[in-house]
Amino acid sequence: MREKYVLVGLSAVALAAGLTTAAGPATAQPKAAAAPAADCSAAYRIEQKLSTGTTWRMCWRYESAAGLVLEKISYQPPGEAQPIKVLNSARLAQIHVPYDDGQAEYQDLTGAGFAQGLMNMAPGECPGGTIKTVKVPEAWDPEHANVKGLCTTTRTRGHAYRMQGDTANKVWQTQGKDLLVYTVNQTGWYEYITEWRFQDDGTINMNVGATGSLSPGDYDAGDGRGWPIGKGAKAYATSHSHNVFWRLDFGLDGSSKGKVEQYDSVVSPPRSGEEGPTNKTTRTQVKKELAGDAKSMRWWRMVSATGKNKDGHARSYEIVPGATTKYPGRGYTRHDLYFTEYNKCEQFASDNLGNCGAGAKKSVDGWVNGQTLTHPLVWVNVGFHHIARDEDQQPMPIHWQGFSLAPRDVTAMNPLTPAALADQNGHVENGS
Image 1: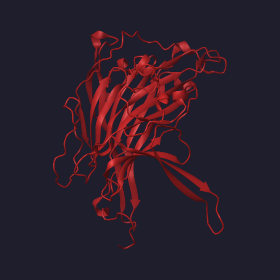
Image 2: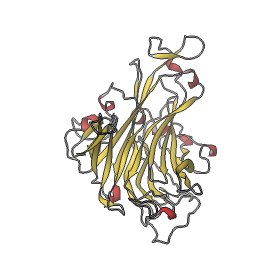
Image 3: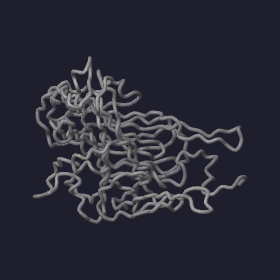
Image 4: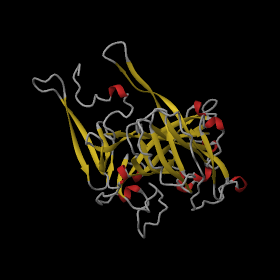
């Protein structure tokens, strides 16, 4: 149904190629000891200082099933003498694509050659950045196994903040800058853009964009499971889902022993003498493995086991789910997040390739079995139900799905705070 190329065979051997990135315009900072580079050779290192003064560092490699893997990710905003370690590793963990008519179901990472479909990018697809060559093992076209397929670049995202001063004479504002790292992988008729966006304020955005073409073999769903494409109502493109999973291994402040916390808020009607409704927020420590469901006024964070900011508050990262359409057809797609105890062989959220022993479960829902969390892994599931439209041809406009990691108390103040406002930390009275 989705075949566009003949796969020559998938290799279990990881591949890699070199990458360095040019630093952006420098911002003057107080002199400090030189920060250590990411713990990998120059060929596998990404290091980018953004024009607003923040530096991101990480290592990378390319796996035969997962594709791009980022490791040893650290963040160093202005005012921090050393990098703040954030993640041990981050990567895709599956793209599950079931069709509405029940005639096809794909595991794109482990069963459809996602990593082998790494595509060449032209310079215009990596504006202002660097494209490096990746050697693909057992490539679909062995004579063209070297692929210019890994882009790093920087981009302005718009306002990082804007604040009117006490008088109309001063406006504090700055334009935020991001480091982007991405690949394009073709699977069947789809092309997936896997984008990692590292903001100068410490936020990390993980997104997968699907583009390419609608499969011409799918124009037969005239029973309510498709949408008419083209003239009249003859060719119905079959609807389907894209359930994308990410696997995150946190290493905040260099420790894998982070703590998971869940927060829920409940709004109650106004009581006598109160002007409005009240809202109470409750914290629950997640000590054992959990299959979590996002809902209104619920959120999770990963808390550092060792590090605190300059205000003495524990560093943490909040998990911010993006828009999603939850797919109930499989056990592993019925929840938005999973927190599991680290197990090296548990690599893919479904159709797991690791050898976890006889009788071991093959998907993430089966790994939630009551273990105490001492080294928690986070699995994030974001779904999209693709009901085709006339505008999807040709080519198909990109549709994005993903989530964010937002810093919470990683720094004592906004890391982009201008020097003139650096004393305004905590309660500030007028005129003080």
